[in-house]
Image 1 (cartoon, rainbow, N blue to C red):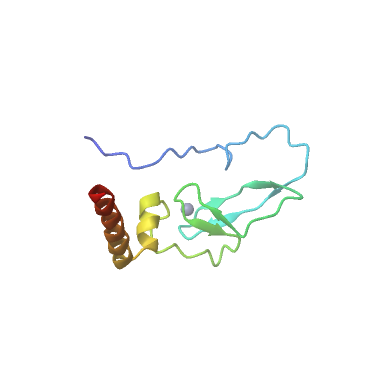
Image 2: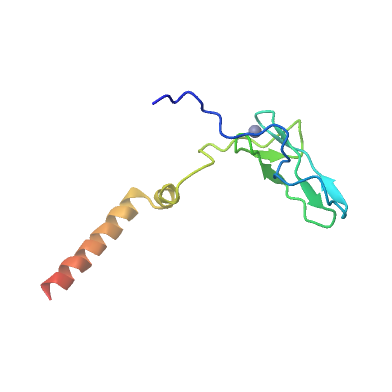
Amino acid sequence: MSGGNAIRGTRVGAGPMGESERGETAARLHIPYYCTNGHVTTPSFAADAEIPDSWDCPRCGLPGGQDNTNPPAAPRTEPYKTHLAYVKERRSDADGAAILEEALGRLRASREL
Ligand SMILES: [Zn+2]
């Protein structure tokens, strides 16, 4: 295994959302978002669209804010988590043990019938 290239497919020159520049008949707002790593993302929104307070940086995945002097702090945990990681986070080990015990008990009971 080479494992040399850790850069995930970022393309220079593509629009923030990959949209084309043509056909912008409606007024668009280009709102810059700044992430804590110094990346700037400038997604465009319809003039009557609701502008979100934060925008995930397409380059590093961290949330970006509209204030370039005070970008949102990076979350303590990885931005990309599996569903299982979320489930594990929500349940304490004790809860998990209790749930497992209950399930095993039900399984044993059904087998004894
Ligand atoms: Zn970034």
